[in-house]
Length: 147
Image 1: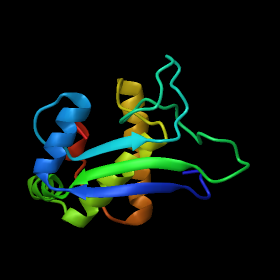
Image 2: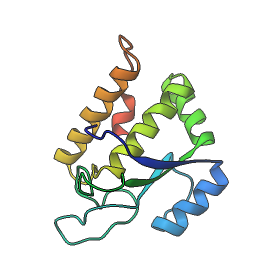
Image 3: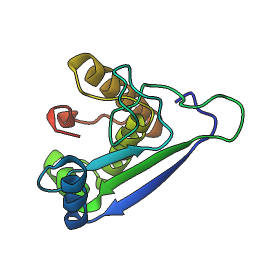
Image 4: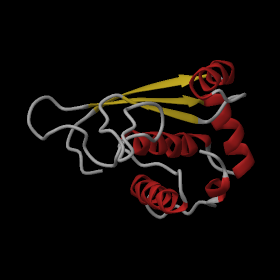
């Protein structure tokens, strides 16, 4: 991902805790699969500051000198991951990896707010999954799912 080093926090929750976080963060009801909170983000072109999910521009947020950046936190619901893995016919550890990649991409500034950005993010996610699981073919039914 063009980063030699970086730090992130990974939090794994149940659906109840994720639903509470989703409500408090976005005002949305129910659990979601993954939420990302960038910590060391560059404001987006519209002037938005760092915040949950997709408000940072892609790429390293700090200079190449000095301490390595803390990227932020990725929060994943294990219950939602297991449920969606059954729905999509995936092994749940692989779906967990997919959601972790998705969250990390958000920390790096990728988003899916418009079709072009979503296509770039999705392509990068599948590229990284193919590095983790060479020769593995997935049904990409998650493309239409809100991730």
